[in-house]
Image 1 (cartoon, rainbow, N blue to C red):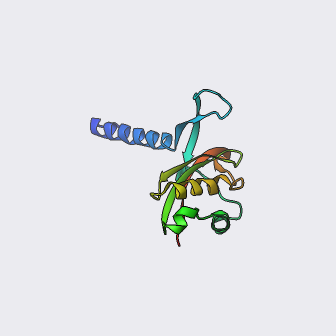
Image 2: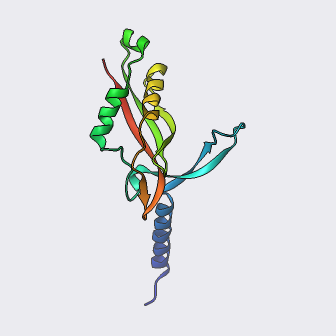
Image 3: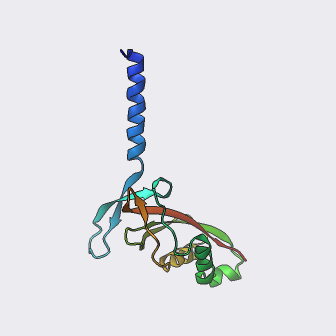
Length: 150
């Protein structure tokens, strides 16, 4: 069976799209080595939460994570007395050992004390169950919101 030029072109475009999608599952992230004195970093592969075969999970599941956040979160004094509320969208990476690192604020609440408290709560989390791709442990970026309501 002969393929026309148009059919061959469409086939090549479809194959390149499949290859592009497979390579888009992860990205390289430069992370600073906490033991180095300089600001030199190293690259690691980090997968997005939606693209892994087995997603990382807080020990005990989502309900346990919500309980942990509610028990650990402390409303900052000035924000409480000034009636400041908000939601902080945080990002972090669950490492291949279950530890969390590269904790960042993606979208702040507008108040630095609420943003710092959200990062503190995440840094206190226990080890997570790790994410996996093809039965291999991988680093996975997760995003969670932490709400501050009065």
